[in-house]
Image 1 (tube, one colour):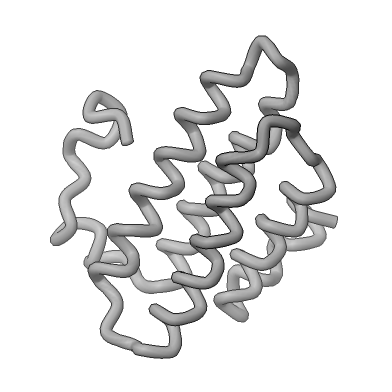
Image 2: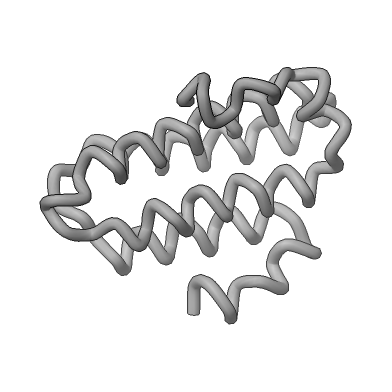
Length: 116
C-alpha cells in the first residue's frame, strides 16, 4: 500500500472500524481497481489491488473471529488470482467484489449497485 495514501492508517486506527465498515472500504478500493481495464491502466490497477491487499491484511490483524479470518483468507486467495492474471476479466472482477461484499450481510446490500 502506498505510504503516501494510507500514511495515517495504523492497525489500531483500522481496528476502530467495525467489520462491515472495513469490508466496505476494501470494496471501495477494489471497485476502483475494477474500473481500470485498459492496458494503459495496468500499473494503476496493480497499485490499487496492492492497496486492497494491505487493507485485507489490516482486517485480518484486527479480527478475533476465526470464521471471519478463514473466509477472508479464502477471499484473499481469489484476489491473488486476479492480481497475477495478465488479462483483466470484468466478469471475474464483479464476482470477486460480490464475494467480498457477501462476507457482511449489511455490505451485501451494495451488490446490486456495484457488482450486478
